[in-house]
Length: 139
Length: 139
DNA sequence: CTGGATCCCGCACGATACTG
DNA sequence: CAGTATCGTGCGGGATCCAG
Image (cartoon, rainbow over all chains, first blue to last red; front, side):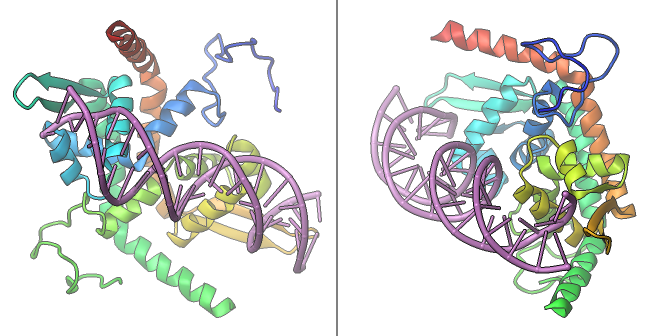
């Protein structure tokens, strides 16, 4: 494919102060970004940013998510250290999810994105109308 | 679909100045967020944030993207007013994509996320190792 | 040649049933 | 309640074809 600078075989992590190319698919940062720049991850973190929640509460909060994607995304978030899973041996067992300090840092960044979406929605809707009108005019 | 200021009937939103529930699947902000909190959108906007690019240059830059997703995502971004598409009637025709001021605002928010991923990658990797070790220990 | 549409197919996701 | 297992479908990737 693309060689550019020669990379060590096996682990293409650059050595010196050079930062990795986040656009390269095999870059670890890019892979982390792919996991984090995901609608379910964003919504789950945002929900847990408001308060700790149990599995089904989370499922109700994040409307439209399937149990499969919820449990799958939660496990990925937990593995990345962004979410803490706590099991309480009640009967039946209850499991609570909380955002970690690391996840909280990320959430701060995500909030800018969410705030942007909320505040700029009118401009976006207007742009959509404009675009659709142009497309209709082209036939 | 788009009513602008007043709440249209049919939207189960709460009434007065209360902001809509971004966790509700049918909330327009949530839908915008779903489009924006997408790995291809993020990478494309980040690439165009560096410089205007043509279709194939973008395809090379954003490694791993298929031309289908590139053209599809670009069209969605253009429709949302985040990206400007310019056709130059050269031979062969060249199409250039540029980020708009609106998209630039969003990109500022996205950059926090990207920066977070770059700076916190070590912690995440460490958390992954920890998680994997715990899972291995459980059998 | 560049930009993009279209077809086909595999895989990831959604819906649901089932288990501890 | 908190998941896993199973199955069907729709989205995304790759190849191919088309327009200019």
